[in-house]
Amino acid sequence: MSKEYNDYIKEHKQNVKKAFQWMKVNLPEIFSTDYLKSKCECLCGYDHDLSKYSDEEYDAYDKYFYSENRSHEVIDNFNLAWLHHIHNNPHHWQYWILYNDDPELGEILLDMPEEYIIEMICDWWSFSFKKGDLYEIFNWYDEHKDYMKLSERTRSVVESILHDIKRKLYEESHKEDE
Image (cartoon, rainbow, N blue to C red):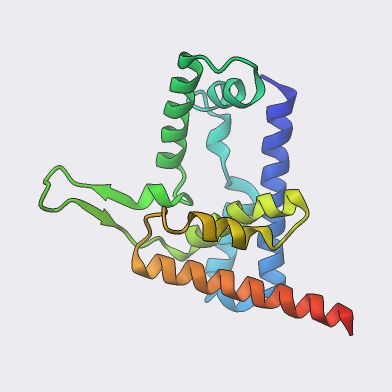
C-alpha cells in the first residue's frame, strides 16, 4: 500500500464529486427526475471507483503507477486489474460492449443508462478539475471520441451534455468579463 496511491484515489473521488456538484448547480436540466439526480449523487459522491480498493485492483494499480518496476508481471497484473475495473464499473463505456460468440452477431454497442453516462462524464472531467482547466475535457474527448465504442444514443447524450457544459462555462466566463 502506498500513500501516493491512496491520495490519488481520494483526490480523484473528490474531483468526480466536484464535477457532479457543478452539474447539479449549473445544469439541473440534465437530471430528468429527482431519482436520477439522487442516483447520480450516490454514484459520484460515494460509490465511484470503490473497486480500486479491491484485492483484484489495489496492488496492481499501486505497483503499476507508483513503483519504478514496470516488469512484464506488473504490466500483466495491471491489465487484469483494469479488466476487472471496467467489468465492475458501469460508468466505463467498455462495460457496455457485448462481444457475441456468434460471428454473425459480432459486437453490439449497448445503450448506457443516463446515470452511468453522467458518472462517466464526471469521471473524465475530474482530471480537468485536477489540472485547474475545466475546458480540458473537450480536447480530451475530441482526441478520444473516434476510438470510443458508444451506441448512437449514448454518444448523442454524451455530446449533448458536453455541449451544455461548454456553453455554461462560456456563459460564466463572459459574465465575469462584464
